[in-house]
Image 1: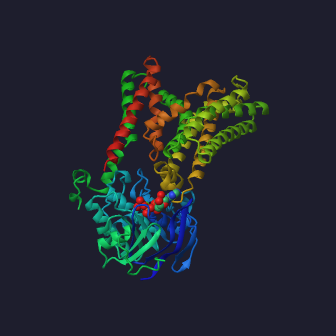
Image 2: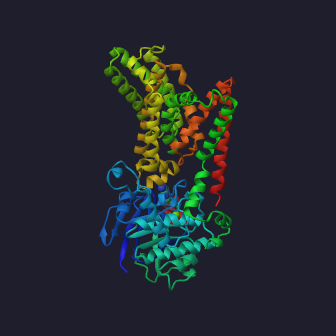
Image 3: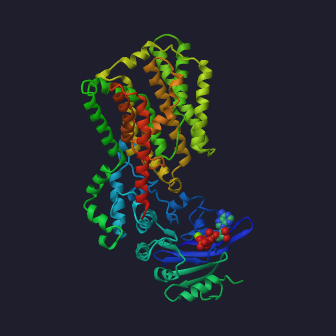
Length: 258
Length: 342
Ligand SMILES: Nc1ncnc2c1ncn2[C@@H]1O[C@H](COP(=O)(O)OP(=O)(O)OP(=O)(O)O)[C@@H](O)[C@H]1O
Ligand SMILES: [Mg+2]
């Protein structure tokens, strides 16, 4: 599958702490790419750069092979990259449909629209369609999001991202706060998102989950990409080894060991 | 599928009918619905206690007229509170705008329409200016809204006293006063103005993008920011609109009392916030309706009128409202806490 989003030699430091040291990363259309690494490895920093929330100090970010500048999250969204943040960034008092269209509200046609009047019906129908087609268990489209279960809330955040993502959906630890059953549902949802043809970047600390959900696994350690593995053939021991450095995996590591 | 989720199962059995049924139940369980019931009970109690005087058109007219000035400000306050903001300065801004308008009309002289229009424009501009200052300080300098508006509450009143030399301006053009005594369709112009403000406010809050962004900011500011809403700009316009409405209220107060009533509005800000919160708007932002605000503002006014007719000391109204307010917010919190437990 083709590489949609790519980072080449991305460098980022805060003060004199080098958080990312020439990181290469690639996400392919229709695949789930897991990004793993120990705490502080630089995962969140990398995806913040890929979603426009942080600016890199060096290196390149490419979309469909062309270098791009991502000055802001808004710009990243225009380029078709949506991010599900760890804190979800949902408005608890608003409903799932209202959250799905937050900041992108549809207006009525004609004069009513020019007065700023919302097209609630269409937004609700479109959100319902998205939630159903993604097979989520969000049934009550009028309940405030704050009243939903953790898994349902996660589904709302993911569906919102999927509704708008043309190229890439990035998810930072989408299952961190969930129980076993809800985690299973979210993983299912993640697979389904990838099957629609967008590239999914999944950050998680749960190794069995990585092997279950991902097609590829890229491992960050101390600001360097140390491994790029096929999830099909990888084992948990291999992943943990790569993360901690106990085991140097050299399989298809792209020239990181200078 | 529903039955698998143990936390949801009993709930789903009870309510898991149609989306419409759920919506209806939610509406009935909402704070405005409770408060409408409270209001109806109050009206009934007073109607039985004073059957000759209370259930009359005169009482209705008095209640509406008494409400009008505060309601105009309460509509603005609803927006500010829904956006998780706060504005305690509106009473002082009302006085400041009224004094500015009265002074300008005094210098202009005469009773003509030109003078009145000049007064109207002055009051609105004076209110908008204070609102804009509040909005700038809150959105750009990031001073907490409570402190900012506490500051402008003092400053606006002080400025009003400076301009008026500490005495009420009583030279209000007759053309203007007649507006308050004119009663198209049975109620004063003041009531019509308040009604129009409430209608527009209700429409904007519940039906437009501006209203939706107001809720979004109040519910989760960070989420609004990430969704691409220009939070600072929106906040600025909210406080500016709120100040403008206080200016309009100053104008209404001027026409009603034919004087600037400088010392009569120190508690307006608190009364307005009380009514708005009674009407179901959350102090924590994200939730609120203008219809709720109308009901919330009607409750203290009805109590006041009822007590006066029953020869009960009207001070009891303040005691009663204080208690009702605390109970209402307690229930609101309880509901939230129960809801946010997954
Ligand atoms: N704004 C910042 N200023 C200074 N240091 C920062 C900043 N953001 C991140 N860091 C540092 O960068 C390093 C990588 O952080 P990052 O959040 O990217 O790690 P992570 O891989 O996402 O870890 P976790 O698994 O704990 O989420 C950490 O050492 C962190 O302290
Ligand atoms: Mg992280």
